[in-house]
Amino acid sequence: MKIKVLGTGCTRCNTAEAVIKEAVAMSGVEAQVIKVKDIKEIAKYAVAVTPGIIVDGQIKSVGKVPSVEEVLNWIREVNG
Image (cartoon, rainbow, N blue to C red; front, side, top):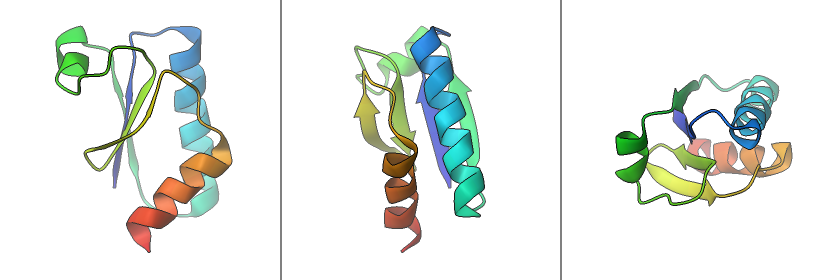
């Protein structure tokens, strides 16, 4: 599983990355958390407001910091 955090390094983007890493650790699922700071790469996902969260290629959140529970739900959706 690949989870991308799209953001240039603002506080909300860093917080979102921390929340995602916490949820991944809690889930026990092996996942790669990738921070995407390049604006051109972020634009490929048509995300205008950061942070953007992409789980296995699917946009899950834009412009807000997700809760740990939201991230756990996304992980469960992918892993059944």
